[in-house]
Length: 193
Image (cartoon, rainbow, N blue to C red; front, side):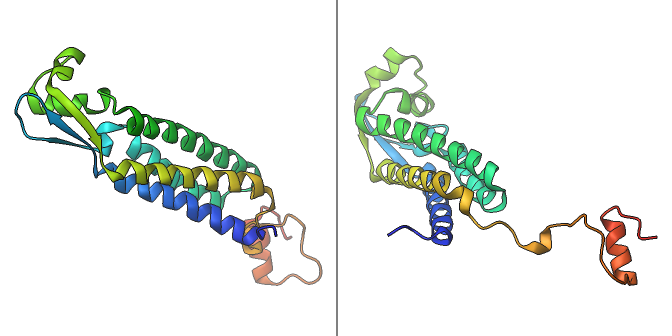
């Protein structure tokens, strides 16, 4: 059974909003923990330090949800495609951090904590890098973004548009014209005289 269009619109917008919210929340949480060889205490690295584009692209997802709710069918497709692109990029970047625990994800935090700079100096301080549950939650959020963007892209042309009260008609009024209708015609750029 196909998903009704009204439900498809609300579902896709909800998925995109959830993804952006999870991304923003996870950007402030600890993603990686670094145990050090120099005897220093364990260093916790927040999501926005491990993945600097996390907060901006999460905000982009939130803005896309708002824009999708307001624009016409052509721009809906454009914004849905942007949402898909953001979802793919963030899925790849987050999966890289989860699977590889790259040194570059913790290098800036280690440099601030130790004063050491350069790949070899930082690598010498790192014993192990372990991930917390937050990047996994963020990855789930990006999958939601992919689903919401795909659903919006597929169904965007059939979403209901804004109400009639926001549309203007350029056709002149038929029949007798009263003072209110005259002002309305003036607002539309038509001279009622």
